[in-house]
Image 1: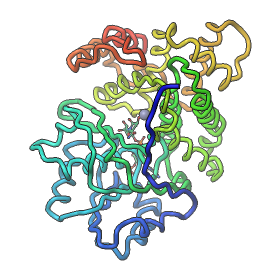
Image 2: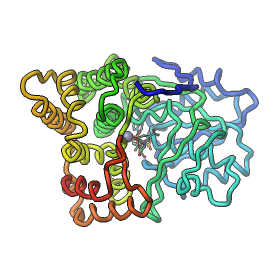
Image 3: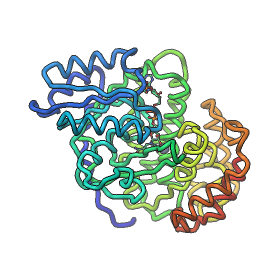
Length: 386
Ligand code: NZQ
Ligand code: ZN
């Protein structure tokens, strides 16, 4: 096992009807900016619950943060934070609203001229404006991690940011919010969380038995509950397991002491930036070809995954590993997610070269757990995903 530090300061308040507890978590004299997305919270009762909990606070609101939170929109919220002397941010939404709020937390205290530099210069954030979240869509784990991904449509770019100053102070996880989520977004959440685990697992063994089994248990849980989550009837037990699995998939725990490989996400973000494809679907497009191209480096872990998660006991190590890749793609498809780029756009030709160019310009000469995935290999992976 590799050396590691682990600190996660986010307080999780989990369960039925817990949104009311927001009022215990925000300083009484805070001036709060409530941030939300395109309006789902006004149709499903979450807004009313949050408003009731904030009745004794001074609160302003900013709605309209789009999926793949957009820099230009967030800059309008930043203006309000500054002119109104906001002291606390409350994100009520999915990964996009929470990530947008993390950007604002950083931008509110940023001393440079152009907050976009936080993303382009990859400035690590050690202190941000305090914020909490009410999670409305399990998927990203953003509610219990310190990372964010921000998009800029003007330049068709999508960049990650983060730092120890960007953990939420608290996150409220009430599985009942899942009732109103469209099935397409449930499928996205399952695929995103599943891939988060894969990216922290599908590397090479460092004999970290507990981390491997943490990862496998999250994958098994997601596979087990997926059919129930895609049923029309709401099932609180499955929803609770879904929500907690998504959080545990990316709150830092399972990646401690083990190598990780965020190649699928790195390429996926480009597909969202170029074509607007949902984040989770970009991952389902790339996973199969990434594991196929990097088969030699990953085959031991792929075979272990095939055995432990998919119960594949027959065959050689290579055959099991290959079956592991096939099961992964079949799982995404069972969620109703298409796994080829050409399923999403007719303009896919040239994408491989465009992404290769972008990675080269950024100096991303070798990514993956061993730094071996070059821009040329990235182009091959993308081309195989057409
Ligand atoms: O905007 P509203 O109207 O709220 O509707 C949203 C949105 O249209 C809707 N929704 C959310 N909760 C709902 C609901 N609809 C009905 N009922 C509810 N309870 O769902 C749609 C998608 O929401 P969004 O927040 O965009 O989805 P998700 O949570 O999948 O977040 C995706 C973003 O997170 C980033 C992605 O790149 C993408 O920008 N990621 C963030 C990560 C992180 N911070 O750690 C890691 C991930 O890998 C990912 O990159
Ligand atoms: Zn993701």
